[in-house]
Image 1 (cartoon, rainbow, N blue to C red):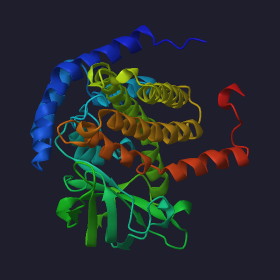
Image 2 (cartoon, one colour):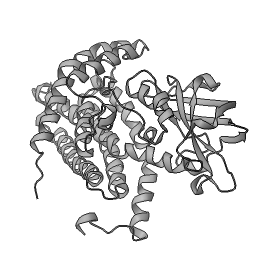
Image 3 (cartoon, helix red, strand yellow):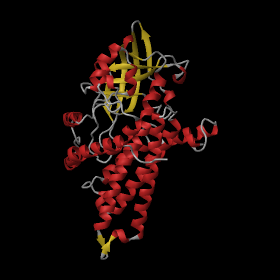
Image 4 (cartoon, rainbow, N blue to C red):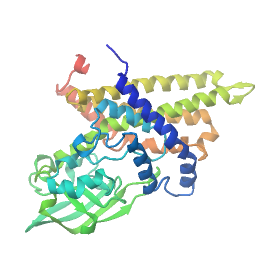
Length: 390
């Protein structure tokens, strides 16, 4: 059994790490300064400039098929790259990406929505969550009723990532209430902002924030249906599933960075005539953090491996998401404790990460939903203890 990275994986990881270190991390002080002044850390044009620099290195469209100019990287490589992105808090992502379900679009829809999104000319958001339908996504109420060649959308979506900046939304709406969303009663629509929906920004404990989207008699052409009528819930679950290994991959990068900060601080900060790293209390926090970090790393890489192996990834990715999200919260909390009062200030990014990673236990499937999936798979015999090695 070989746990080493391949030459290709190591080369890609190291190239991304060099780019992040040279081009992105130098922006951290300015990002913190702006955020302390209640400004965005980077504006859209600055992110775009970084993405175009990365494109010259060949990093464009990590998950995007080659026919659309992307790299179409395997899941394990994508996981490694997301870990490197997590090593900085600068709000940067590689360009050339689009919502995975947009590839179900018709050729006309691809020209209007998919291609411009990949090229960075348009910005999308995915809207399924509602005030009364979070973890229970099948309970959505936003309705779409047929009116000739159009559909009329009424209702509200909430906690929509990127919803305040998007110029179009992928909206999952109820088209047949008797069937119910899970059994073919929901449909996905591509809805331009110019069609009449509006957004309201939601302030959160983290930087940036999601939005509520309000649809009041919004008229959408029939040709803007994504996929097929009744396919909305299935597409929604496909969209959500993508985050099950990328989110904890990002968490690993954060944990690596903050743990190194704790080690450096413990080796230099002196109290009572000696460095705090000589204290057992500090040593144990560092040891526990490293152990949990390593455990999360292999859970997450295994979940990505199941995708590449063509296996059903849901059980493995739920374990990776559950443990990775909890791990990074515990590690950041310990690192803040090690830094004491300085860790609590906004002069350092630790408190920023503290606020950021709390979201990881909620979005793209709460801890409780991951536990439900894991236990259900075992209790119903969908999987065996030990997974593919059983």
